[in-house]
Image (cartoon, rainbow, N blue to C red):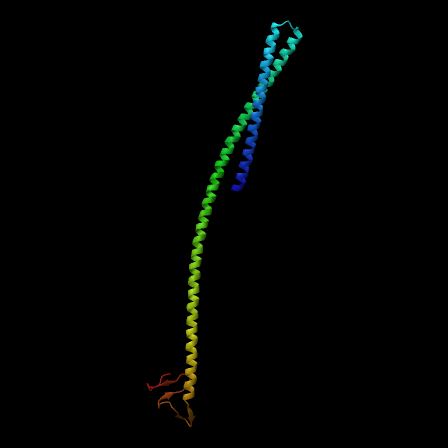
Length: 195
């Protein structure tokens, strides 16, 4: 939106420049008309002293009146163009002031957005680092757990290989102590055996 306002302000500035140029041209035309009027008045004054016929004097007087009318019209045109140029200048200044205010606000918003983006990026980097550390820690624990599971399986296999239990006629024979319960869990009364 600020871009459109700036473009409109530039167009207004061009229009204002055109008005100023027209005003200068009109002022030049006015000055030319005033010079012609002075010349015509001088001719009329000189013609009154001479013995020129009355028709020539009448023509000169009509020419003077026409030139006076043209000069008056040119003055009015210059005055109107001056008023238009002033009005356009005031409007242009207001538009420029509004555009500057909008631009300042946009710059302020951009700075705040950049600051928020930087803070978010920093928070994201910190969260990413914490995540990567947690993943590493999890992998270490998983590796340790896998090692313990492997050791436990080896221990169970070695223990089963070393312990042969044979059940025959309701009596236990083997390497277990006298008091033992065999089932899903093995409990041993003797403290010398650990499972």
